[in-house]
Image 1 (tube, rainbow, N blue to C red):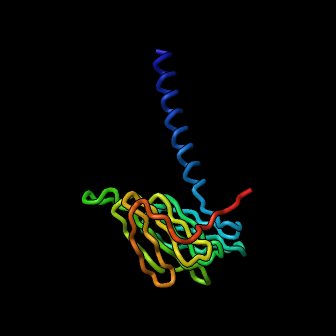
Image 2 (cartoon, rainbow, N blue to C red):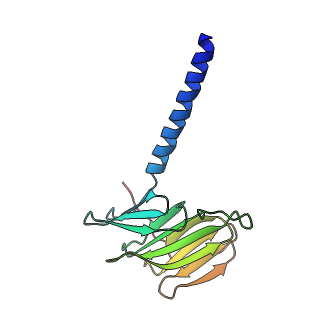
Length: 167
């Protein structure tokens, strides 16, 4: 009887430990700009909280999970991507990409739904383009024109991509 009680108690503790670890993993999903001036994180499902250089927060509604994202090098834009909250049986692998303009009021400037998983979305060094890599190929988003050009998976962008040199 003692071993049975110990087993159920250990099982209960294991379940609580898993919940705790999952909560910590979710809390670390913060996207930080290269210069550290901006941070974006999910404050609750469907709401993104963006912290600016002044320390002020702005909340933005989002229609998908956040699997990844990046700030442009000049902190003018934020691109996020992830699976929709409601997954359709017709297209369970669908991913959404959202481009935000960060100024006095953060606003959505473009949304795109993909029929395949998005692996990355990287701004060009000058911030004029975003290279979006999916299982089906590479799309180039022209930020100013709000247009997308699709290419095959072997395509290499004709512009350098930004990279953050973190210490």
